[in-house]
Image (cartoon, rainbow over all chains, first blue to last red; front, top):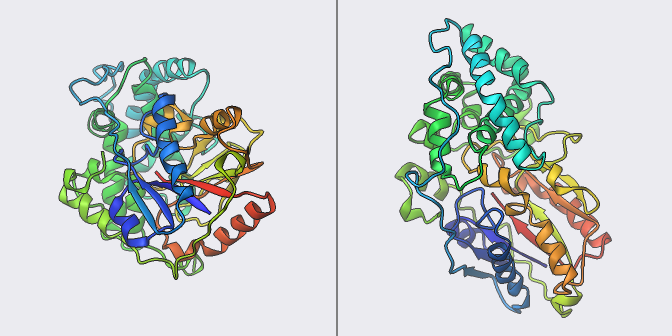
Length: 235
Length: 155
């Protein structure tokens, strides 16, 4: 038997899993609040209680919101972008320069989190990856032969920046972090260019969605194309 | 919060496109054991794995095991969607994969036991049907581990 969390009530209503607890939390936060043990236990208890139900499907609403801070109340981002080489003529130079500013904050954040970091899916040094991403931007090409590397490199780069931007203790607005990442950093600007290039490529348009969020683009990231058969996709 | 009425139209439309019909006739099971005797497993679609594991591909119906003996703080995420918050998970693995909370429930005898192995899928870009083979495989592994109930978390 299963019980679980649903983040989009309408999706759960439609698919009708046997037992599901809809929670009014942001996507990416199924238990509501990070580092709030009591809050997380209340959510779990409500979902586990559904196991006692003897008829279904059961879709219950969780009554408690996970209050998050507004952009205005968000802890301040420690990184100042004023010194990055905005006038550097190449993307590679700008991204590597930005990295030197981010690195101490990333290191500080990692120490605050007792050594925990999500960086490392690509298994390459951040400088190598950012330089290569910059070179792709400079040469106005898409990494068609290295799409898997590209996916992992941009995931690592994005989470590296998120960890740096939230290095200091405090409660951050996820929206504020997104806004800084996408609209104040060279990385965000570069990723938005990659997004445009993927979108313009008929064969690779489906990949655009992993590059930038709908919030970053300010609208839909393209028609929803779901793959029905993984083997067909690879042909 | 994710109430569709609070979201911009493009976001609302996108999420409503994910409304899928039920996978088939509903499978319903009851388990007479009290929660304090139940063996529980966690399954998430957050794209979690350890550094040494293969990362998830852009569209990938496979799964990764997470042993109860592993340190969940070492879990990383290779999820293809750019459209959910990662900053919370950066702060606390339990926000997505609440293994420590379940260990606390075990310690205070709220649940009977925890599975030896828990599982992560990566939920993006594929229709539900594509996961069937992997899901059946995980169901078999959970049965082998004598699991009574599964706690599911999305992102």
